[in-house]
Length: 124
Image (tube, rainbow, N blue to C red; front, top):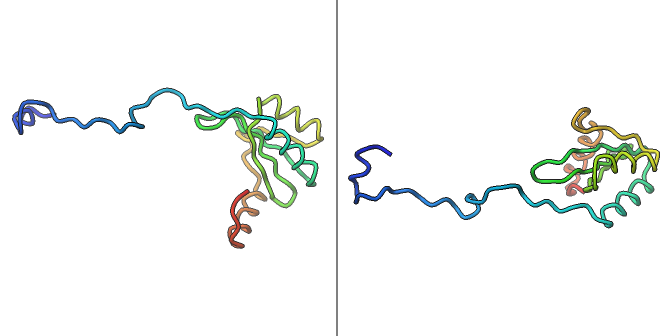
């Protein structure tokens, strides 16, 4: 605020209040994984072939997730309790697992999303 701004329309400084949501600080609350998530992953991997697991680390808006990608690019993503749990899950189902932060996501998943978009379907 400049010196002359103080003399305009009274002596009080004119500052806007922050928006209600913008004034909030701190970490966000993240929904934890539950039995429904684990059941979905188990049934999904059992019903498809050529599945690979990609473990995604915790971010500011989501907890640790496990991305499962089938041979044709079909995919699903669910929250999991921990990174170790995700790798153990993949080992139990004999599914290779990778750290998504290091290897990224497979091209076949992007190709699948493009095909679904062209057909007018929503992402899973």
